[in-house]
Image (cartoon, rainbow, N blue to C red; front, side, top):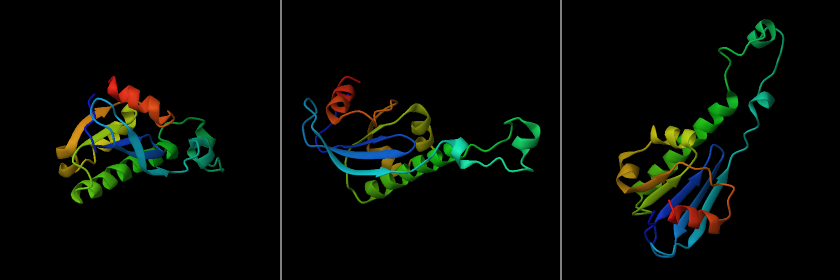
Length: 143
């Protein structure tokens, strides 16, 4: 994938957002971190209680239980889309590339504003939030 000079690249998952700017050119990207955001989101089992009277403690099943961890990840994806909307409307970028795991990317797409969609140059459905910047550059360039 070609990454235009000065493009904004969002690398996100359900709890972490990294905003990069390509200071290089389309052939030799040089991603510089502009901003980052991390959300504490403990595992679902740590967000639930098993107090008496709850369906899970009396029925033993998980049918109909709320996955608080997934809800938090979905809210975080919607928040990422909202930040992109604000930045797009403020003309903070001309070109945008979004990298996120398939589930996060799907949730973000539900919330894309037209201003974001109009500037979207590409998407990559991979989780790269834990990768060093040089690996992100290579994986994007080869996508």
